[in-house]
Length: 495
Image (cartoon, rainbow, N blue to C red; front, side, top):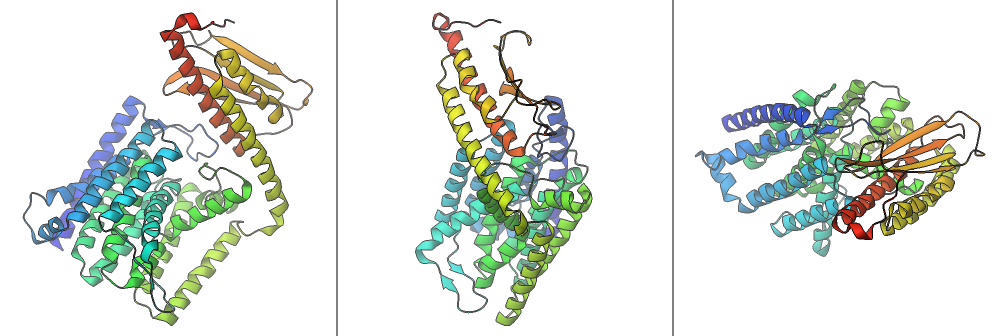
């Protein structure tokens, strides 16, 4: 127990110091999460990269085991596959999150790295080989072990990433998952799992000091993906030593909230015709705030209570017989159904509206694909504008304007393209402006005006416009670079 306490204290102190230092540096260097999207809950820029504190706090006591002679350290060092999997895999996932927080990583890059790490874990022996069946005999997976293991690892990584939407939420959810595994390991006498869990618990609490509402720093993808990775890997490696019911049912229950939220997001986006990896403001925490009119902090506390319920269910399943397991699962199922009904997920009265939204989104996605393809094929600023112009009709705009400039030019210099449709409507105007930026270089802006009576931009249209703005920024940056390299091939456009 002394070793566990020391590991917890070391991880807590390291996470505290690292998070504080990262927050100060992020403020000084402008590494901030801007409140520039309708899906953002915070209203002011907040430093990100707080996940560095979690990563450092978790690894600090484990690294100390390499130099401190102890019985627990000897057991840890004897587990080569566990060390390689956690240290190498964790470092890769943390690096991916760090890159995403700073530069932005697309879904293709994220999933490629995550799947590669998951396959590496499988090769090292992190495998789900049986499925628990509380109502009968266990199911041996055989060849399905590989795909299920990979899906579990990638799924948990992204589930923690998706739930990271409110101050203190992802860290708190992860802490309850850690607590579940620690209690089970303590009752089984699994020293290594206890050590890993107290190290992660200390790191999470050290970060939450700065992240609980009102947060002064966010964990970012560095923290959320790393937490998901550690929980996924540890639950596979260590739970396989005990009863098969723990091999999957208990981790599923321990992470019940993020898993449920992820499944709901997948179903919701599929029904509404939205891109599967697009962000929205329809997660469980968003709906608690909007439908039940809960405050930011109250919403987080309510979800902590729900995590406690999942935690108790997970602990109960690990000791229950078939009948008791059935009762526990039925009870938690009733709670989930009531919650989803309260939050409007099961309301069938709006199916017609859902169908209309789906059709509109499919048309919108088709429009965006054609516009971005034309933008990427453009050979000049004029052709970029020609590629963008179909947005005017597709989005029923009264005015569409594209300003483009070279990085060395004055903000008011460059070229302006504009399209007017005064007959669209006579209501009060709604104006939306999106910066065309390549990394930190401002290359122009896209300005859209509606006069159809709307008071705010639709979230699906906002997502579509962000994709278009990114494509324009990428192509304009390429054209500017080409102009600098071969100026005789470029005909400059002037105001």
